Length: 183
Image 1 (cartoon, rainbow, N blue to C red):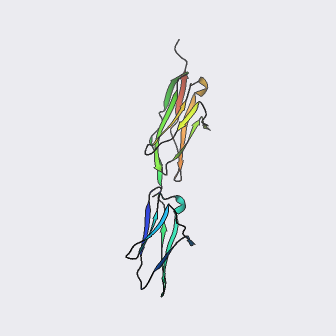
Image 2 (image 1 turned 180 degrees about the vertical axis):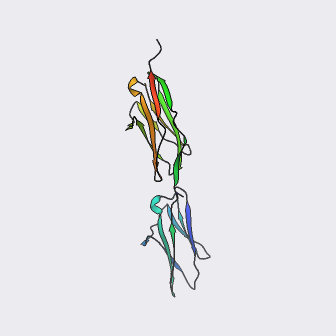
Image 3 (image 1 turned 90 degrees about the horizontal axis):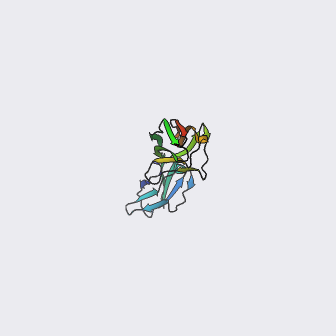
């Protein structure tokens, strides 16, 4: 699964010293902090992939050789992504007083964590000093968009487009009205 650690293991046996080589999509597999190969005393060769990425998807081959010949084993690694879902949608309407903070919140989950684009009247909003966007930290799935010092020009229909490799979703629309301050 995307973002999780995974292992591929093959058990080999033979006479004499065995030399095991790993390949990814036909090319020698480079090892680093994320891709590690370990050998066990009983003839197993284990490839550990830390925090699997979409680029790790493909065919893994191990080749073992000794003085008498070579043998290969092969497997295909497919990465499961969890399509995003909106767990808590936007409210259908929001009234804000002029000069106050207008805040919209949506809760969306998926693996990998979805990206979000906030929209006003079907136009993409660009964060700036007045429009502030926050994305989830850790296990939190809450995305927020706040407009500081709401003005009548901020009235309109707001929505969010949520996307990851599994596709994209459009949130409900929230009709925002900005009222004047009380006299």
